[in-house]
Image 1 (cartoon, one colour):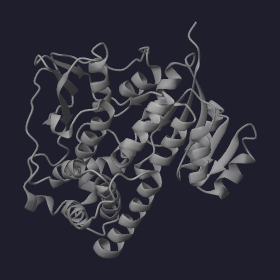
Image 2 (cartoon, rainbow, N blue to C red; image 1 turned 180 degrees about the vertical axis):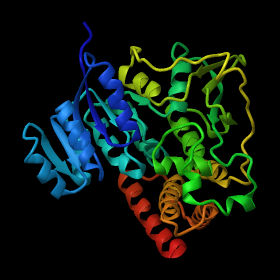
Image 3 (cartoon, helix red, strand yellow; image 1 turned 90 degrees about the horizontal axis):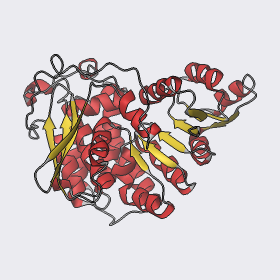
Length: 384
């Protein structure tokens, strides 16, 4: 009989969190939900608590935590950033981090130090704190199991090939809703246009990142840390059908790819179920329909500069990725609030990188401070 795996979910009311709970519902004899956290969607959190009866729940505000604690007396409630750390350190076998942005870094670190395996859907954790997180994971002997579809695909391609020399990682990208557009046309993009991703259902921030191609830049940096490869050995393929989720080319030029329909519940189930494969009643890929024609293109990094800027930040090292990530998060939020234009995102990031002075190899406290300072600079000098 398979042991029940205890799962804590940071960001349970978001896109990844809700789909993770779908996977758990399909495998009730495999999982026990021990912790749930939310931002503003308290109503959905309440429904999740009622269904899964977690030991711990975290709200964004203390007021919401107090209200829910009076209703769900069997659950211990926490609030804010300290609450996220409490959930991360709580008793579980695996922590799914599906928080958005830099908020995921500190809880991930604390979960690793508590000895928990991590199902990582928060790419900013490795973009800003790659060496800190990877060193901590190695020290504590915990697994980092990727949840992003591309990194999950690479992870699956490497299973059974551990120790084999990697020549290249082939990281796929849908190209987003503006694939093939010229720069002048991009200047006129509005938030409602950028939020219409052609293939994937995702949260707002990651959908905008996909439209600017920053998402792929962030994923390149994440792949560098997860799979211990140089950034120059990661090639991005624009693949509009989103059927091949990524591939690995080995030293003999053999290429192994992972394919499937674009459904985030698949990579989630791979991470949560590891080392087993879970049963999941998803739609199967039909090679005579969806996969009858697969195409691949080179990304246009002159029009979509964000990916090139991410590569530049990674190659520069030090605190450059921290500054880049912070600037991107603030600028994306400003675009969604209609304070800046679409191409102002990449222009603003470029300015921040040009003006940034690296602090060498930052530790956790340094990363938090640089992130805060960069955000303040963007608000003060670019968005104002």
